[in-house]
Amino acid sequence: MSLILLHPDDNVLVLSAPVRAGQVLVIDGQAVTADVDVGVGHKLARRALAVGDKVLKYGAPIGSITTPVVAGGHVHLHNMKSDYIASHTRQATGAKGS
Amino acid sequence: MSHTLRGYLRADGRKGIRNVVAVAYLVECAHHVARAIVTKSDDTEVHLIGFPGCYPNAYALKVMQAITTHPNVGGVLLVSLGCESFNREQLRATIEASGRPVETLVIQENGGTATTIAKGLQAVARLRAVASQAPLTPMAVSELVIGTICGGSDGTSGITANPAVGRAFDRLGAEGAACVFEETGELVGCETIMASRAITPELGLELEKSVQKAEAYYTVMGYGSFAPGNAEGGLTTQEEKSMGAYSKSGSAPIVGILKPGDLPPSGGLYLLDVVPDGEVRFGFPNISDNAEIVELIACGAHITLFTTGRGSVVGSAISPVIKICANPETYRKLSGDMDVDAGRVMEGRGTLDEVGSEIYDLVLAVAGGERTVSEALGHQEFILTYKAFDPIGPACLPLRRAS
Image (cartoon, rainbow over all chains, first blue to last red; front, side, top):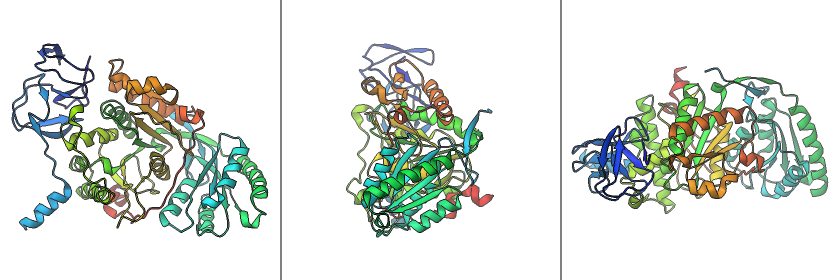
């Protein structure tokens, strides 16, 4: 199996081997077809993800979905974004607002 | 679970899994003499430690006090040149108060190099004889302190070795062991995720502040903006990249923050804050992986779990290091230096749960006396440099405050 589930709560899987477009993968018992070539270390959606969904990896939110993703779809810069605001930035913003 | 180990019972009640005589140089000028004593002793249980600086440093004294009274240590020989400013009397008093045998040799008062080495060999023999009297006593998993670090990381570290260590940490922590992770500089981006695991809101705030401190410190050192994750390798966000290192900590609640030399007051998961407090004074927080390992040992770590992707070969003085190789290619090249092949997850030859179980089993075996690969190869690295810390605040150890 070329997909690693890092945590049971995760909604993405990590590729331990590259997949080619058209390749059939089995995710949680469901056959899905890869639509693009994806390399090792990249993430595939474990299930369909909607805009605003938190991306869970290691059981933790690592960003949010910006464009809907189908099950088995590649999750990366084109459809998710960071939710991280550095502590110092957050503080600076707070200071301006107060 | 009722795994019963056997530990060396020290006079202060602590239990060790090794019975080491430490030979400590108190300034670089005494390093050669101390090393010659260790080399000529030709005993795998006689280890060299020390501090090279001639100027006094409260952190270095605290770490040396913690290391020389570590439960794996059964006796200590202090080797001093004589005119250095290290407070050898206070260090000796601390070791004596712990009930461990200690001897001091001052090179300037003992006729120089050759005679001090000869006297040192006699001293080590006496210390070995006393240490060998330490009774073996039943020891529970809950009496273990286990540390973890990563070094020589690559793209595989965060998806094989680190999460596998996290699984082992969850199991060890659930059985009452104290588990310690560190390197706040690599946790930028997941501080709020980490804070959400704190057992009190005040501790969560302290966790966030420790990462903020690390970010500021590394910025001054010129390594400020942690590059956003390597997108080509599949990492999309800063928090995702940091989670790869953070996944060594597993998923248990975080019960406290330690600084080097602080002992965990209970079982459970702790963050070791290794970044100095105050203005940047002495350079990089830790100049190499072994500096971090020494700090984990100063917090009582009996064993350190070291994950590596590129392939580190180090071990440590005082406490065994278990090396967990994240990358299957690296493992094939350096299998003689690795204890665990976590990279097999990449090749479908095992799962994270299986590797986590293997690490857990190996921790118990090593605690029971089995030698790690780096121990068998004679690795006994030790490095201690200048730092400055403020004491931890009351919010950092809620369990102690509550008790």
